[in-house]
Image 1: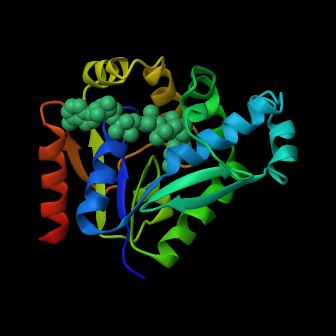
Image 2 (image 1 turned 120 degrees about the vertical axis):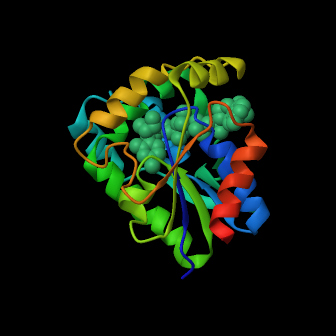
Amino acid sequence: MHPAIAIDGPAASGKSTVAKLIADRLGYTFINTGAMYRAVTWYMLEQGIDPADTAAVLEALSSVPLSFGKDGSRSVVLCGERVLGEELTRPQVNDHVSTIAAIPEVRSLLVERQREYNRREPVVMEGRDIGTVVFPDTPFKYFVTASEEVRASRRAAEGLTDSIAERDRKDSSRATAPLAQAPDALLVDTSDMTIDQVVRFITDNIQQ
Ligand code: ADP
Ligand code: CDP
């Protein structure tokens, strides 16, 4: 099994953008784990389940009709036959995803699916706990960040409504797998770096 490339960091730090480009360069599969937490959140909201009602979420969890597949070289989430897309970045999903992601049973279900991807093929995986929990033994760990102002302006430039500071606060303070830099992860502050510089910095480090 090839060691996974683990990329973690706060909201809008550039994780998906650089993870996708690094995966393309290396010929690996790009896995966006945030989309998996977002999909569970979207599904609960669709069912009219209150994300704060943990008992109701747990009851629905056992029959969630989501599956985690691939489209070419990137991960996708399907609900039945339908590939989920814009649903996952809706403001309501942004507002509730950190609550759903704090539930340990949700995490263990998704972490198992994430490890399955890497059993089949080499992956570049991005999220919040990839270096700390999902692949603690990989030697390739990067914690990608940027100042809060830079991250907020990057997200605003996408035209998306997103309370990133609030999500970061919740993600960092939860009991299970909080957002944190693994002790052996390399910190990459991208505030003053272009996307291309970040991609080159990480791929050079991997190939050293
Ligand atoms: P994350 O996955 O961490 O939430 P994204 O990859 O979605 O972050 O990036 C958020 C936005 O910031 C995107 O519009 C992306 O193009 C832009 N972006 C990412 N990295 C940089 C960078 N180093 N410089 C400028 N813009 C960036
Ligand atoms: O793209 P952005 O960084 O804004 O968010 P995301 O990666 O799509 O993740 C959405 C949310 O899912 C995060 O705010 C976390 O609550 C949760 N998440 C998580 O808990 N663990 C992961 N490995 C990935 C995401």
